[in-house]
Image 1 (tube, helix red, strand yellow):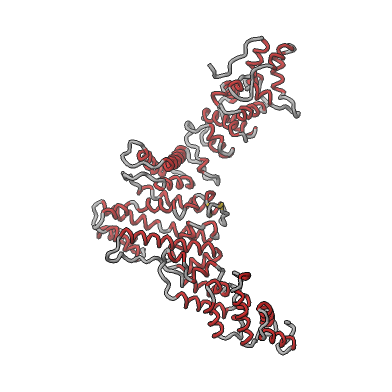
Image 2 (cartoon, rainbow, N blue to C red):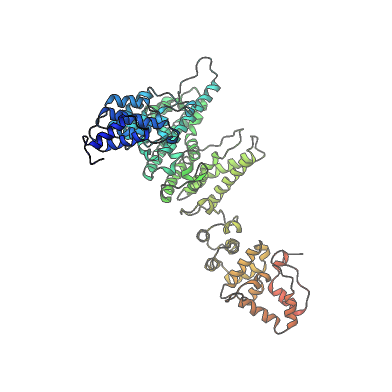
Length: 631
């Protein structure tokens, strides 16, 4: 029909059928063909009205639930559509239909009309309440059904509910009830923005720019940084993180001012001392400083003295919690894929850690009756795990925090004690902190929580077995000449189960007596290593793989594991084991028969019987030896 003009007989016949009341579906098809073809530039008013009526009628049919009113959009965006038809139609539309009509594909004139209708319906935006999550405003509904045209986007933003009313309780209001209502309203406010930002992830920068200098600015930024950082494009994420850290200098200034006031200076002396710094603050920030310095409340003054530490504590457990632990981030219990690279995330975490380290001089012990919680020490762990270099000054600042936390966890402390699960979490945090203080791991891309192994005399074989070979090698490099640590690392190669012959040889080279240590460890393997069959077999494999393993070392191996060790061909025994057995038993068939009946097993105490001891007993017709370590 596009090849036919408006006066073409075929076109006139189609127009007559639209006007004559054909079935709704037929009218829609014909009207769309006419408006996109011969009447694309100019159309009679009755055709536009018929197209609108047919498409809106379809919205009421169950089979067309949630369909996009394409024909209405075509008619209302048509050059011939009158403003009155457009306005009448938009007033009939639901908020969902307005969102669909105001999509990015909408014609400019239609998008402008939808924006005007949105503003008219929104009126004066109400302050946010929990009720508006259940019965949302038109603007909230439209953001659920985006994306939106730029004009409609701006109108919807301008008519969203505002921040909760922050006025004072009225006469007769219970203060506790008023505070709870305000808390719930603010919780709903954050929830509304979280839903909007999650649903409109392609508009994050526009939301940030729109919210600037409004009551939504802080919430929008905090929700992007703290609730959805994986969905934020890297450049914007970096900007948000830098702006958030840029708030920290104010906390430092507040603490310095309050400490000077606490030390005996009056308010004016403090203001004069920090006049240059205060002049750079906003009016709101200056009011806040004076509020803390006032003589009315020593509690406020104490809070100001601890402001940097409090800020870091809340930030580490709040807006930065995902950035500091990106592999643990979840979105409704689902793992997330980060838009930002691992390098970007590591850089942001390091910048936070360097900022947090500046709060250490402002930490002071507080003897509270309440139980200690994880937020009071978790920030220290996160700081240490992300600091590129843990200096002696940092260690000196952290040690009193750990000691104070340990005292508060002590049963002898007069205050309340945390629950069992909270105590376990706190002890894990403090253990990690103490390991980093004892031996800070290198600033590599790996998870430093796992690579923080602590002091060599305290680290265990199991802990060494649980880290990658590269991490183990770097740990040994930081503690050269420690033979006891090298012996733990040798045993950890067997306990790991995934160490190569080269890894084992690399550890052995670090020992001061590589020629004798393997024999000593193997002879006391039950005491040094322990574990099950897989550990014994791994140790046996690693020892037999060495080209210079001598007969004495082979004889010290657990018999069952040594006899199961494979040789060069499938199903064959290891040649070193065969050589030792032939040397001990020779051509004595009875000795071979006795050895075949030896008590060696794959598990239990007899799994530790040494190959040489059993060969000697079989050759001499002596009683079978007791397992090593048994009485």
